[in-house]
Length: 357
Figure 1 (tube, rainbow, N blue to C red):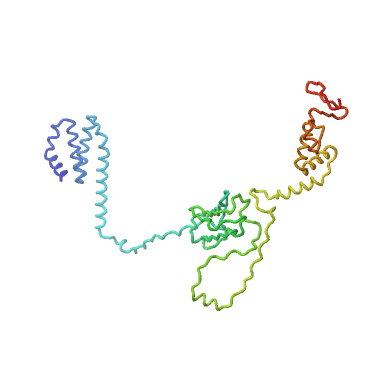
Figure 2 (cartoon, rainbow, N blue to C red):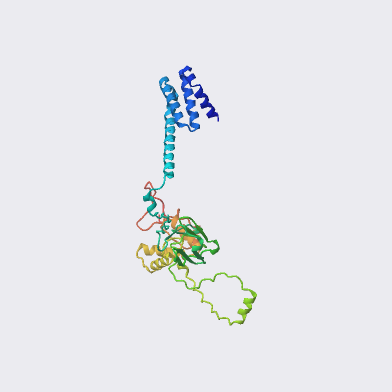
C-alpha cells in the first residue's frame, strides 16, 4: 500500500521533479522506480530508473553503479511476463488436426540402475604384528558385519571364517605357535578391516603365527547350557557311549622349548657339543701344561687354591706350590729363587739378592 501511495503521489507531482536540485531529482526518480518494482509495474519502473540513471551519470554520483542491476531485473521480469502470456494463449488455442490424429506416445518411466557389485572377490587377505603380550591379526576386508564373522578362540588353536558374497571363506584354522588366554582375546571391527587381538600366555615375541606341528589333542568342546530335567531323564535311560581318554602328549625336552628370539637353533646342545670336543682335544707343549694346572686348580680345595695363587704371584711366576702350610709362612719376595742361567734384576738393571747367593 505504501508503494502504491508513493507512485500515485509521484505521478501527480511529476512536474515538481524539474524544480528540485539535480541530486534530489535523481533520488526522486529512483524512489519512484523502486516503488513501481514492488507493485510489479516493471514498464513504469524502467522509465523512472532510466531517468534517475541519466541524472546520476551527469552529476557523477556514486549511486550510478546500482542502476544496471535494477534495470536488468526489470527487463528480465518483463520478458518473463511476455513468455507466460504466449504460453497461456497457446494453451487456449484449439488443437490442430495433426495433433488430434497423432496417437499419444507412451511416457518412459525411470528405472533405477542395479547397484554395482563389490570388486573385491576371492579369499580375504590378512597380516599380523605383535608386542610382548598381544598378537594382533588384521583381516584386510572392508564393511564386515558381525554376523558374517565366525571366530573361535582356544588355548592353542584359532579358527576364523568369513562370509562374503554368499560364500564362506576359511581365513585361518590351525594350531598357534604358543598358548593364549581365550578369555582375554578380543574382536574389533573397523570400517576398513577386522582386528583380532590374542592375549599371549607368555610374554615374548613369536617367530611365527601358526605352529608347523599338527594338532594331536582334540579341541575342547564349546560350552553349552545345562539340559532341562525332562531331557536329562530321557538321556539317563539311553545307553551311554564309552569314551577313552586321549593319551597325554609327551613332554618336550628342555632343549626344544620356545626361545625368546627368532632363531631356531638349539644353543644349549651346541654348547654341550663344543665342551665335549674340547675335552677330547689333546694339547701339546705349554698348552698341555696350562691345561694341567687348570684342571688341578678347578678340582682343588680352598687351601690348595690359595697356595697356588700366593706362590705363583709373589715368586714372580717361578714357583707353583699346592701346600698351603708351607706357602702360608714363606715370603717368596725375600727368598727369591731364579731358574738356572737367570738372575733377578730391578727396572734399573741392578741385580737383586736371591736365595742361591
